[in-house]
Length: 139
Image (cartoon, rainbow, N blue to C red):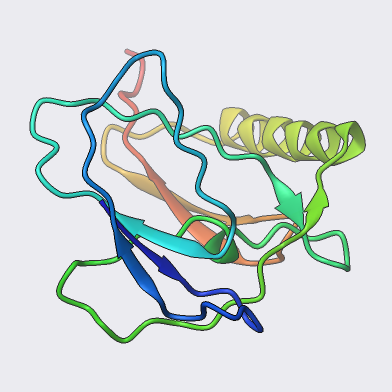
């Protein structure tokens, strides 16, 4: 695995470290926010990502600053300002409410045998996402 520090103001900014290890079901690897990672030679191996959601100073979640995957051939490393505030229960409740609203919007619309697209706005970041669904129309 290769790790690169992309944290703004870090004394090890853009330093690269390569680790060699064997996967284990009883060991965890914790990658800090703002540290990019790339795995090599992980054929037939499963990885489980369990992100700990951290928010920025405005209470927003910006995923691109926490989990960074990139092609091994790309050496143009970014400089990121990682989120630092641990998301609280109210944040998760708000996310669940927004997801329910989104699902209800889909349920209230017609279903098509061909794909349909809906625009979804992430309440935390304000970023818009296009979601395409393929649902068989009931006969």
